[in-house]
Length: 241
Image (cartoon, rainbow, N blue to C red):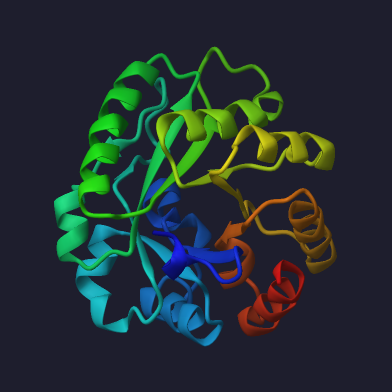
């Protein structure tokens, strides 16, 4: 199922789901336009691009790489216990010719059981359509005092729930990440690109991520906020492969 999303067992996914999650605060005059990002995805030969359904509906003809549709999301305005509401069905994703689906899970949230219940239905439906499932798994909520210590827990939850690729945040400790990769078993681990970093710090982090045994990255702002997206993509790909 993962053949379309991977090359030699590795993957580089261009993430552009931040508009729903963060509002327009991440954007400038160029990258606020989805076409700008889709041109980067095509030119950089990314393994996939991750989008919400609204952008897919309006720009489907511009998407020239494998497509991951995020099925749930939330704004950062809501301050209660985190839960990412369903915004797209598996059936809609199939109609939009998605190659995989993405789903965000907040472990530690008071609403964790609701999230797990919904995901189980999503996972079952996706299997009927032979769609790979990518989980964004983040420890969040009042019970989570230090999300960095739960990296391996997040990875294991992804395996236990049935994810094919598990997207987690790197806590900065390579040995911890190696253990997280082991905890994920045969599921693949990719790391979230996170907030914008300088090139030296970013590339060193990519080296650590790959040395730890990850399958790659799902990265957004560090690409499309960069002054030269093509060049930084090239440098990252040289490390990933």
